[in-house]
Structure formats: structure tokens, C-alpha cells
Image 1 (cartoon, helix red, strand yellow):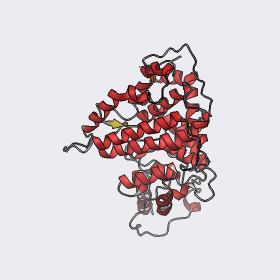
Image 2 (image 1 turned 45 degrees about the vertical axis):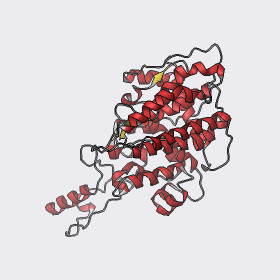
Image 3 (image 1 turned 180 degrees about the vertical axis):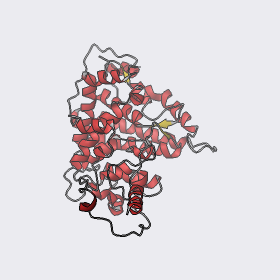
Image 4 (image 1 turned 90 degrees about the vertical axis):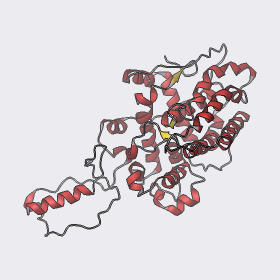
Length: 390
């Protein structure tokens, strides 16, 4: 029986997911893979003949239990971030050129223990709560400032059409992106003046830095969750200035962020942006994180759509224009080839989570641990007067 048992163990290992080193994770999570044929063997011995039965493990694990490394333990143990009200600033203004302050894990802890760190994360959570149960097309309050920001993003979309990609041999990093970025940097101040009142025009010295770094890196021609976080920080600064209010939050997600996502997808495709700091198949997504947070909030308590609905192509085709999470899944399936469970195992695993509420709370904790607590990402984050290094 021993050779047959070895053969069975080898077959079992072949169906387990692999970790970054190419070895089995041992979590027992169902990745949806199948083997073309099972080995022929004699009936196995019963458990009573060899050993007691193993501890039961579910076929599917929650997204926050996918692997048992330190980061996943941190996510499991972390409390769910809570929303916070953003305090607005008042004169005398002390705007300054923002600078990098994070260089070590100690700096990360300092940031998250600070009022600024807690308030910024609380702002992201508040945006997530504002879109809960709402479709993208649902009517919502739209201030003049908000409409101006949407108009700015539409202008940036037009620039992509005006600056076509160069014919070059390399697959990634089209050099025309630098031309697009150079125009962005050159016109950034004038774009800010479209919504800044005269008494706040001096704020450009601070907020332009966040805005300019929201769309990718000029030299590396890449984009990732750090740039996306800069866009969230830019919006946070505008709320701090009192130009966007809590009543605008739903529209910040459904109008501004949706337009931003449209722009970034176009930049990624046209200029072949490299993923910045991608975890490959073991990351949530090559480029984005926040659309999944906001999108999962949209679907909380939905009557018909559950996390497993992301496996239904008809649902993706018919509802991805109304729900950010479905839109992200549809886009991933469009740009990546092969079985979904192989190129996006974390997203595939989410389909096994029972409720969108659990998905949303898990993703909020994951965003804090995997983005806002990572030195390689946050070492580029900027601090000025609106987001203080305390």
C-alpha cells in the first residue's frame, strides 16, 4: 500500500495552489483546478486502519485566510477600519511643498498612530460607506467643484487621443506616456485653478504634488496602488479645503473615481504601463485596489448578486457598467488570458466568501495592511500642511 499512498499524496499535491516559491500553500483552498485524469489505484485503507481522520478543512477559505503568512495574520487580527469626519482647515493657511517622510517600518507605525493617518484611512472608509447600496447611475448631489474635477479628468482623457503611442519594440512602457505626463505637469496649476477660489490658489503648491503623482511614474512608466492612493490623498486635501463636502462623497465615488478608473484603464492599455510593485498572481490586482473596496460596498445586501456572481459572465456583461466590482472583474478577464482561478486566485477566492459585507470589511483591512503599511509603497507618500507629519 505504501507506493499507492505516495502516488495519492503526489496527486493531491498537484491540485494544491502554489505559493511564490512554487511549493504548495497547504491551505486546502479550492482553486478550481482540475486534473485531466486520476491515477488508477486500489481502494485505500480506512482511517481506522492507519490513523485518526484529519481535521476538517473547508473547500474554500476567505480571502483574508488565503495564506498563513505574517501579513495575512495581521489582516485577520486587525480591527475593521472605521469612517471619520474630515476636519476642514481655516486661515491663516500654511501651505507648503510636501515631502517624503516614511523610510522604515517605525515611520509606518508613526503615521498610522497619528491623527493624519487615522483620518486619511477614515476618509477612504467614509467613501466606501457613501456608495453602499447605490448603483453608479443613481442620482446624487454634485457640487460645482465636483463637476469641475470630472471635467479635468475628461480633459486628461482627451490628451491620450491627442498623444498616440509610439511604434516601439518593447512590450511595456511606451515613451509617449512621458509626453502625456509632461503636459500634465506643465498644466497642473491651471487645471487646479478651474475649481480653486482666489483665496485658495496658494494651495496649488501642496495639492499639485499629489495630483501629478496620481497617474503613474514619468521615468519608470508604471502605475500601481501607490499612485491610486495619491489620487485619494488629493481628494482628501480638497475635502480638507472645504471644497468638497460629505454630501459629495457618493458622487466622489460614482462620478470622480469612476472617471479616474476609466482614464487609468486607457493609459494602461494605450501606453502599456508596467504594474508598479505587482505581486503577480498573488496580488489582488496588477494596478488597483480601491475600486474593489468601493465596489464591494455597492453590493452589500443586494437582493440577487452574491460574491459567487462574479463567475457568471451574463451578470458581468449586463451589470458591470453599474457596479465597480463587477467592472473590475470584467476588465481583468478581458486583459488576461487563461483560467480566472489561475491568473487571479485571490479574486477567485473572493467568490467563495458568503456575503459582500465580509468581502468589504476584509478588503478594508487588507488595504491598510497591504498598501498603507508597506514601506515600498508609502515611502513615496507626501506630507505637507494638509496631511501633516506629526
